[in-house]
Amino acid sequence: CIRDALQPGLPVYDAALHLGKSAMELTEHESELLMDESLERAQHCFLKKNKAFLASFVCNRELVALDERSTCHIEVALEPGSSYRVGDHLGVWGANPDEVVADYLSYLNFDIDAVVTLDLPENPRQALVPLRKPLDLWSVLAYYVELQQPASRAQLRALSKLAKDPMEKSKLERLSECDSSESAERSRRGDAYVEEVLNKRRT
View (tube, rainbow, N blue to C red):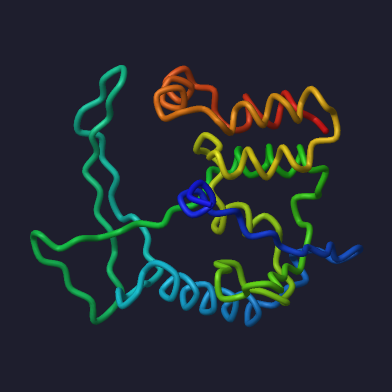
């Protein structure tokens, strides 16, 4: 149907928790391999032929600070062999803040050093997360998923199918049918994903 084409469903991962294993037990070599695979998946899914590399900020200076606006001067260290000219485009894939990741781990009742293995049997090429390898859950939530934007209609529909309480299920279904003006109003009021959905609908 047209709605399904315009609002495709979310990938559903199989997840396994490694009982008794800590993220500290993952070797540096394993971490490097996971990062390399992550960059390859990102390039395949949305970066296409663009070159991705790890970078750090060498300068972050506030230029203008107002109540509802902030303008900063930021300098990024490029990898050896890279160059930047005025007018070039630089895309940044940042991490979720530590406090947000910690909140989600607490909500899900996972330890901060939990280790998981993920799989996406139906369409593994869609995955941005490395599959069938041990991953520290903190890094998965920090770097591979968006935790701060308001929930999309596809996410709300997926959650409604998992809700066990009839009233919560009905509420999620109604939220998933909000039109664009209602969604914009919810975002403006600050009814973000955690506050409006997770914290209020526990089932």
